[in-house]
Image 1 (tube, one colour):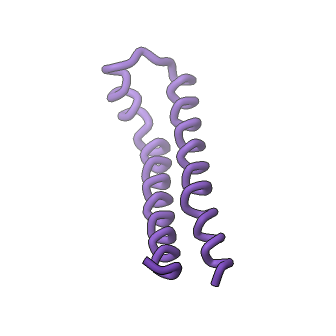
Image 2: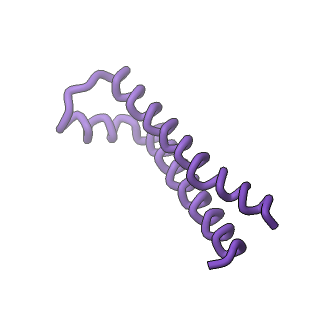
Image 3: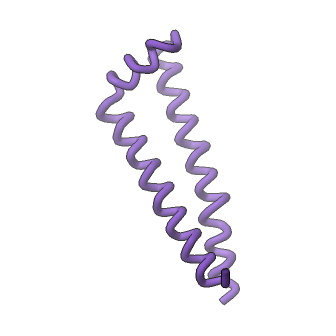
Length: 80
């Protein structure tokens, strides 16, 4: 695998991960009550805890995208 292929791979990974993040965000905004009911069957959490868990999860996921996809992508593009 050469640098160009690896760079393209990281770009596609980043795009797919951002699509997943956007779907999660949209589901959280528009289907929050359904998600709360679904998770409420298994866990006893308040609305504030539910919001904090999802907000924190989205933040960690976004940081993962930045560190594991975007940073190596930029570094590889600086090489050529």
